Length: 111
Image (cartoon, rainbow, N blue to C red; front, side, top):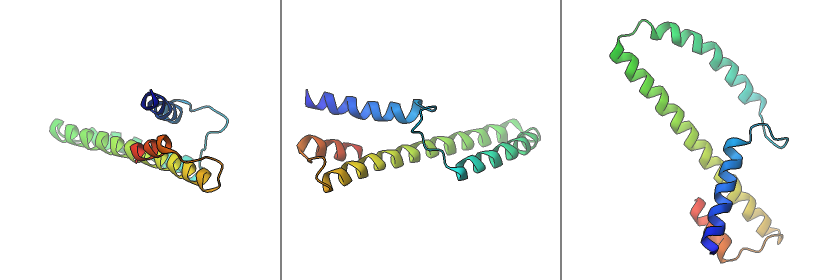
């Protein structure tokens, strides 16, 4: 039963991280917004250049870009999970959250 609870907590955090894009507590860094604007500009040039490539080169480039996106997403997931672990450890270090065996198992699972 305890494992199921922690699994639901973990799933909740991941759902919250991935789907709640318009919540008030969402962090949106100015630097990230700026980088997205740069990417949008580069996308037009990318599309123009892609039209000049052979089908094989287009496929390779597409697979590469998709893999970059996937790696980026997984790195974001790692950073998000690390933030949760750090928060749990800070709260426990302050004595606000007792670290018991179940919380320790959640931390280990997320690592």
